[in-house]
Image (cartoon, rainbow, N blue to C red):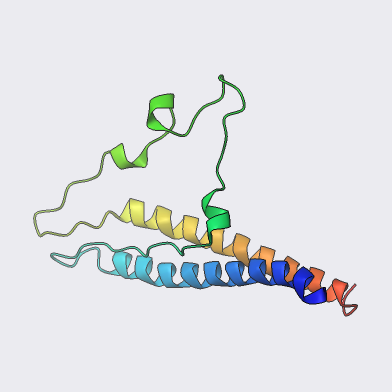
Length: 133
């Protein structure tokens, strides 16, 4: 029974660990984009997010009232695929420093959140096994 109880926590901890590793990798790629902002012909890159199990795939937001803003483009939500993008410069470089720095800041914030949750989870596990207060 103990392994079943810790198994759920272990899955959460593994998901957080995977998420933190992804954020570390993404931070490196975003930093390279910023560093190459003046390199002719450079195209910015990004890292595809980690795929989680089917349980997380079904998680989503629901609209509890018709007066609330929806997430689909047809219901007034923001659709980033239609956002205006800056043009490629004459030297072929497509890096937009403002976009990249926004991604860097968001990535850092999300990493800190995952690290905080991971730390709290470890603390709860220590309490559960009698090693923490």
